[in-house]
Length: 221
Image (cartoon, rainbow, N blue to C red; front, top):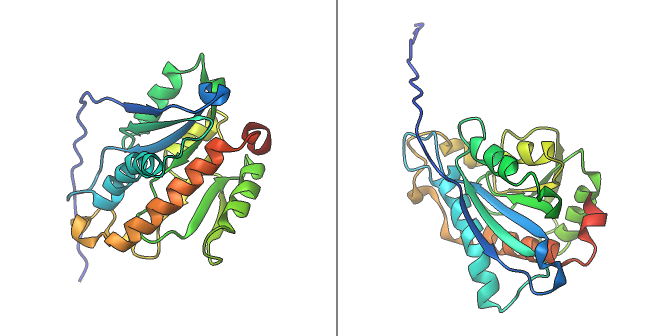
C-alpha cells in the first residue's frame, strides 16, 4: 500500500519578545558577558518539554544553583531566552540590538539538544580552542563524555558563531531525544527527574568555570 499525503503548513506572523536576565559578575570583569541561551517557542504538537521547555528550565536554574552555593563568577552570566524555531529570529534580533557592545560578549552556552543525562559537549570547528577547553572540562565529569565538532547545529549556536562568538552546546541526547522531539509525545511525563538533575549540575559547573576563568577570552577565541 502506498499513501500520498498532502499537508498544508500555515505560517502566520505574530509578535514575541526576548527575555533577558543578568547574574552580575563579582569583579572588574563583570562588564564581560557569558550567555546562557535557550529558546522559548516550539514546533511541537504537544507541550514541547524536551524542545525546549527543559532548556529554558536549565538556563534559569543554573543561576539558582550558583546562588544556593553562594558562587558568583568574575563575568556576568546573562540568561537569554529567545523565540528561535522560526529562522532563529530571536537570536538575530539580540545580536543586531547589541552590535555596539558585542565585543563584551565572551561566548554562549546553548541548551537545545535534549535534557537526558549529559553526554558531552558540541563545539564549532571555527573555534578549535573552545573544543580544547571543553575537553579539559569533560575530565571533571564522567569519562564517557564526548566532545563533538560541527559546522552547523541548526540551533542558535549557528547565529552566535556567525557573530564570532564561541559556542558550547550542552549535549543531553542520550538516544531518547529524537523519540519524542516534534511529536505529541514530547511531554513532561517523558522527562526523567534524575537526568534533569544531572544535566543541570553539568551545565551549572560548565557555566561557572567558563565565566570565572581569568583569561578565557584569549583561550577560546
